[in-house]
Length: 342
Image (cartoon, rainbow, N blue to C red; front, side, top):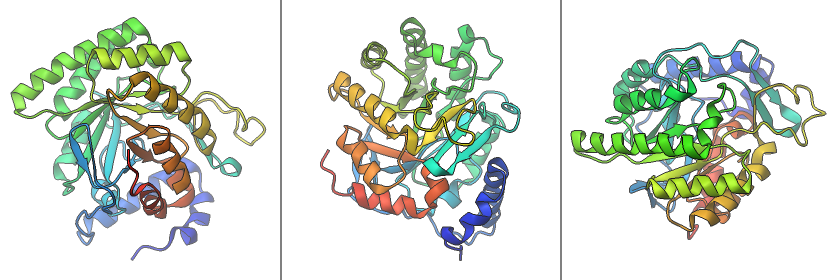
């Protein structure tokens, strides 16, 4: 039986953040290998159909915690309605130099500049194949750091080819601030070309495998009104299945005075909530209900999860909040979002 997180947290926070993350993954992986974990039984609360998939509840795990799909079965015992793994790239890469992960406990925030560190798509695929998990699995794909931006589509297509048969949905990450020039792909012409290539390949893969796997785009919170409208237009034009709003922010309002507050990288956790929710509201308005929005960013309690649904989201994802609240945050958010009538 696992100890309550409130007892474990002081020891976790006494460690370097990335070391703590690695030890947590190792512990969950070891537990998973024992074979004593219960089968996946999501907390069922107001099941909802989004992107053609039936979600047992509206609360999922955001990408980033399990980049390589190593602990899917362990995470599944927390009750999530869906789990997203990655971001994965075609080739393994170490990411940016350490230190690259920083806690801001006074603000319940985290800054990271990890840089898509992962073991490559082939390793993730092998891990997913061995998982017992039968729930909704999203696989988040990206590009290698040394792939020129003009050839980025090649990396996304390579990943899509390899994960398609195993994913419930595929998330296309063009919004991490920690891979040089990646956010250029949110530009009007770049996005149009990328989405066109991905949609064509998605159709080909659906024919090849005999089933359709939805695709969602993950966008940044650092967008102005015109950029949001352009992205919404592109999503509609290419008939994407969904959009994830948002990734981490480069802004530092409210945390500049804190230790590590001015570290380079993407800020997540509570300080991101207002910015990401603002983008969510404007995006929902621009989309006019034509495709669903999955909300991420700053959900550190059940009230924040409900606020995302009130702002127009169909589903929510959590990650940084788990660092501060532990697995109990999953049930809290599920309870807060149960019965939502969207």
